Amino acid sequence: MKTFLTALVAATLLVTLGTTALAQPPQHLRGTLSLSGAWAIYPLAVKWGEAFTKKYPDVKLDISAGGAGKGMTDVLAGAVEIGMVSREVDRAEKAKGAFPIFIAKDGVFPTASAKNPALAQLQAKGLSVKTFTDIYITGRVTSWRQAVGGPHAPIHVYTRSDACGAASAWAATLGAYKQDDLKGIGVYGDPGLLETVRRDPLGLAYNNLSYVFSGDALAKGIVIVPIDANKNGKVDPAERIDTREKAYAEIASGRYPGARREYFVTKGAPKGLARAFIEFALSDAGRKILESVGGYVPLSEKESAAELRRF
Image (cartoon, rainbow, N blue to C red; front, side, top):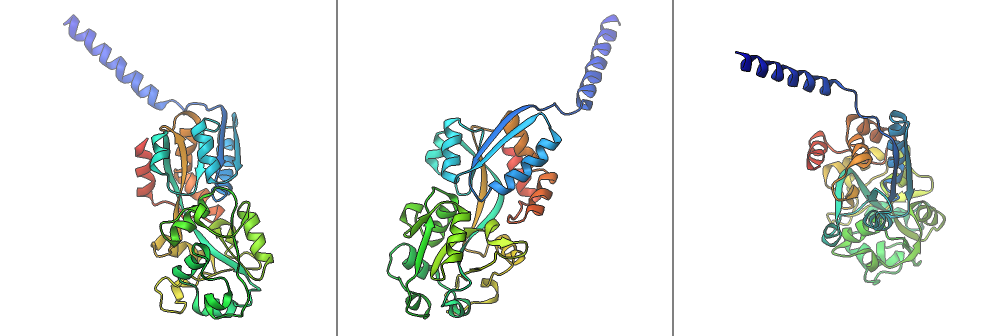
């Protein structure tokens, strides 16, 4: 009987302690967390960071943009806890410890000046992936007349000078190519590339979704060059993207050729502050922030849950 009572008391104590532990408030977070990388992810990471540090005031965040390549290099070298990478992570990077977490959907869009002399033809016919390839990869198409039947004026081709996810995604849209295969005058960063093509009526570039739009409308002085995905020689309604809402719908549907995934990358499975921050980003609160920022398509609840289960 004494043995039974002793066991009963011990079991009751264990249950009580377990219940008490579950009832404890979340662990207080403190320390510094650093992130670097993709321009495409930077605005969203900043907003997530503001909300996270408001919730945990003893946490300091250091977030810098410099391209997806820098983010990957920094995180693998241990210079930051989280790399912001707006492209797929390759096998060699995973072999070095890169652990990608899918955080959002995005897209890369070909852009031109609203003052382009071939604007009418571009909006009526668009450009096929083959034509873009002949502009950016083979160099066979060098004028707006060759490209779309416009005036006999040269195409001023622009690309990113920094190693970045946008360039990698654009190259992949054109085929099995990489950033180094892209021709053009190199311009640093998404903001720089957007401003360059805005000022050049003969320019052609590509930009991330979050930079192409201002509110729901296109950024001033910019047009998205329609991609004639079905190669029928005309711009169909689904191929004309001139509002943020339309861009979201095409990316979410999977139809848009330039759609891509955005990642946070840690070295090994995330832990500590990095894990807490990523869990916050994938939470309902993080999703609401993403939707308020604009420029990104959120993961579905099923997709978010799948990512959380991975670590």
